[in-house]
Image 1 (cartoon, rainbow, N blue to C red):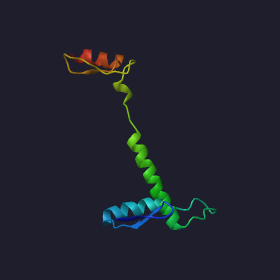
Image 2 (tube, rainbow, N blue to C red):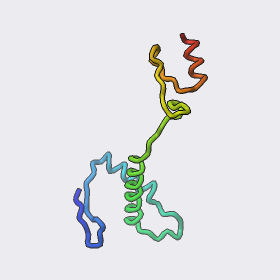
Image 3 (cartoon, helix red, strand yellow):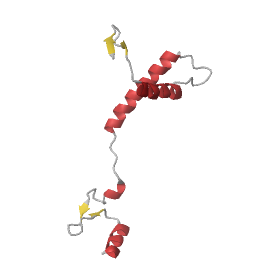
Image 4 (tube, rainbow, N blue to C red):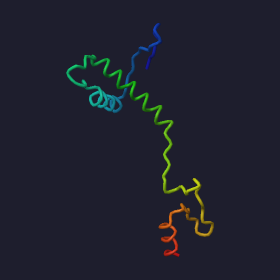
Amino acid sequence: MTAHREPDGGISGSYYLRPEAAARLQTLFDTYGRKQGADDTRTTSIRNADVLIQLLVQAVTAELLVLVNAETLTDDGEEHQDTESGDTDTGDTDSRQTRRRRN
């Protein structure tokens, strides 16, 4: 991949993708780079560039996204470990009753 900074701050360049990656990229272009209606005057090149920009935005968003399973939190926001059984107490009454029945 080559990338060159342009005087206006943009980047231009060229790249080569192996067939598998090329197929994935083409699928993204075909899926998300379609015209958005009769009044969409963007060229195919511009629409494909917009797809790449959206991928970059989503990649940054994905890096900042933190998922927390609500079942692992109690009201105070902490997990509690049952030191005897090794079970995690989530503060969920049903899970405590299930553990009692198993024991």
